[in-house]
Length: 639
Image (cartoon, rainbow, N blue to C red; front, side):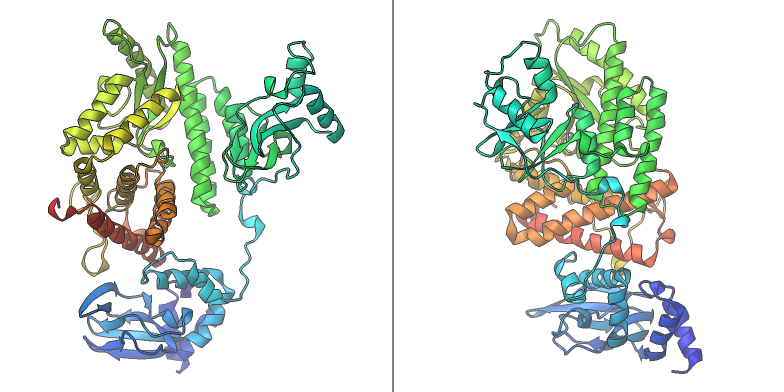
């Protein structure tokens, strides 16, 4: 190919990923070897079952359909247009093609030599990962790790430690933990602490943590005469011990210690007190970090004396979030940290509002956060969804009790709005008398929603079933959660209607792989990422988790990961759903930070080819999940 044509090819390729990641000289080298193919409409590039070519393809002009034959029927499984790469199987496998590629209109293709391109892709992991994702989009499991193994083979992929913020590193913990039995004498524990020169000792029972004793316990409980050195250690130990798995990050440790006012965290096999101890983390092991780290922000929240101060801290939390997104920190870590900071902010506002009331709360109560905060998915400034449940009282005092909590709720909702959590347009807030109820009233409300189920009841159920306690007595929310699970157990009609509502958002893509945008109104021609992409995953995860009576998991990604663990026959799909949800939430957060809004509505014109490709991968998983929901809940007659 002469240099003039090669330069024209290079000019085209550099507009699209992954070729935009190549140097000019490398791009020109590839362009010199490109084979240009002109094909009329209806022509086949390769057939299902055909031996693999020595090239993969990028479309210069035109459109391609991927067609799969199953038994006697055929189906179009994907479509490609200008700038899309396809035919990547030769990069990953020594097999035959698993589908047929055919032109939908007159098409010009550039055939890229695999032998020339593969070394460049292996050397540049960004290029390799893009090709893996493009290939995976057209497989049964678009997020399989096997594609990475097949592509990189024995090549070692090294992630630089500097790529991650320090506080997101897994914490280094003490592996040789000194322990005593609960029946041991305090003298024995103190002697061991002195001999080992340690400030704490774990009390264990059958290898599992039962409690912990620190220097402070010896000072305040023994040296003061409250206990003697011949008493059992169980009489002075602090219990239960906070436990986490070994991959807990430095930031999570710092936040947890400040939130719960503890100086030690136990590391166990599964992160609960029900498995064996494998390590211990002490507060003196933590490095004091700069003012923008989450531990310092947590301390500032706890000390805040005004709404104005909390609003300023909220601004710093957004800066922290922006940094995490920019540095490509895993969303699992990011979500946990931002949730804890949001939760602490809500808690601090409630504490201050209670102090401003003329009297303390008349009975026990709990503040419930719902929606994205209830699912631990709230990253950006979104509207409030909250409610109050208070202890059941007699009929003579219930309205007086409710009046107190309504007055308290108005103060809380107002201050949450002032720091950035806007009022809910549908008024689903604790200041609304409909959502400030006693435990018995909430039970009756949930019973009504699940037994007399119309569209409004389904909508309210989808909001209120994802609640999490932000402040107050957990016994109230636990009782309500248990009641909810009992209501939906074997309630096939309700579950079927909830499943049908999970399908109310059609596929995010229309004909010919085009994004379905809003047709009118304020957001005309914008893509609704929440309605068309996030909600289908959120709603499907909720109905599946309720159907299988799985307790205490509200987070959408974690729900799918638990389903993958319980149902290995659908493991790949459920893991794909978890991955897709985190990818979509990160995408929304990134664009929300960029545009200084909630990231819900996206301008398609600003998306890169790579971003569109990644979104379409997620949409493909949504379509597969919706098919599973239809079959699993036999929804043919309800849709």
